[in-house]
Length: 356
Image (tube, rainbow, N blue to C red; front, top):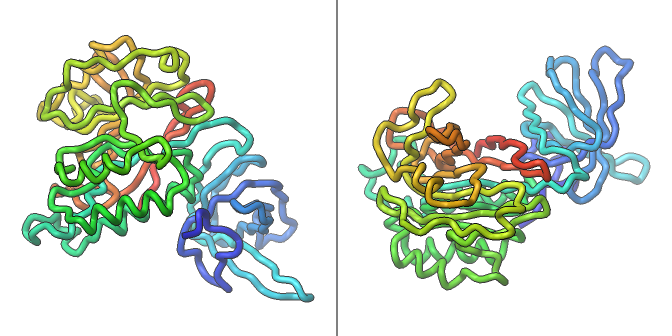
């Protein structure tokens, strides 16, 4: 598997099948009324490509030299001339551009995901979501890893339910083989309610410092140059354990402390001031109250619709991951996606949602 989509993957003349991450080197205005501007970009392998933004597509783009971007629904082509091969990217009316930040910063980028439910295909048909009758969640797990590579993430953080409760040995082997052979960044995780004992034993055996597969706990794991400390609490049946997060020198000096949990987010309000979920789960306030660690963000798996909110009383930001597959049993479209969290020396710089 290629770690990045690069110039060598461009089709002869067609839209790219995958997003491509580029670094903007130069932006030149155009004297042609057919072309808004031309951009010199660099792919993940350091190859230079010309990107043309055509006027006919009526795009409103703001690009900055020295910044990295993810391009989706861009057209690529190559041709031979004078004994050399030439490469070009062209805008389309559907072009989506997502800024990933400056290239020369020391930001830590974490791909956040939850509820991959590998093994979902074995559920009885009447127990599957309407839009997921033929879903093979192994494909979505693979897509998450591909996206981590495309977005140049420093690590993947999984908020539980790696597996579905009906997963079999082949599903467990797929996940571990994929993590060991295709991922070159750390994989941090907690367990969710669907991670059955057999699945947990499989992941436990693969978990160690050399494999890069690491289970989060109340001790905290330091990640990235920007100084992020990750804490984790496994699914605990609607009640957080009475074990406080362990404050340490690294968590005190950390630019961001992130708590990863797997439960119904409560009491968490959306931007309209309404509780995301009325049903009481584990009270997230307890995890904050019983620790001296200053938590800057709570990441929660378990619910299959991704949302953002704030925790009552503490106003701590909460990110509900949602699922990377259309497995929501309710009427709401869960917009399968992952999230890219960016942390700098100044703290959390925000996160962006990336559909799958």
